[in-house]
Image 1 (cartoon, helix red, strand yellow):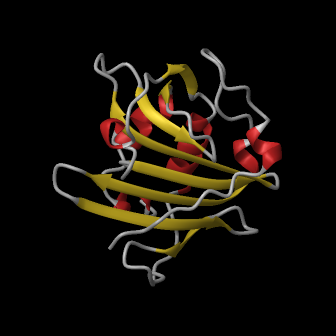
Image 2 (cartoon, rainbow, N blue to C red; image 1 turned 180 degrees about the vertical axis):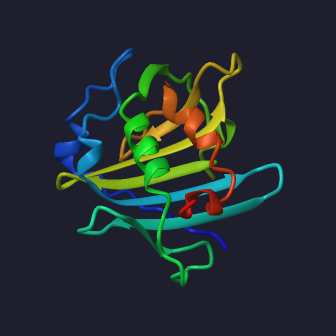
Length: 171
């Protein structure tokens, strides 16, 4: 199953964070996030999965659609893990602009991770690809921006723990 994620980044949210070395990529209140989509792809096994989540009025996160595109019977998601991921997204910063290269060379033609979320009425998106040669950053595309960046932050490590969609289910 291949899932395509389109860009829905609003102009307002695109302007929220200047994109220069050292700058935070996203300025948002993670606690106000109401929707989250995660797409993961493992290039070594060619396995991928995706999940769409939504925060209910009760503040519980629920799975709207799982990897097969259907709603699971047990919809409750692992709220603490999702909160940790969203909070860690605020730590992502730009290490530098990537040297000119193709999306394929940065593993961004088919990203290893793609995230879209809504928070406080704003839309955000990031696509993550290969690690840099020194493994201290990851190549990324942010929203509608065509510039490839080297990004770093706690979210990269949090995402490495999400090896399957079952990790997002209530524990």
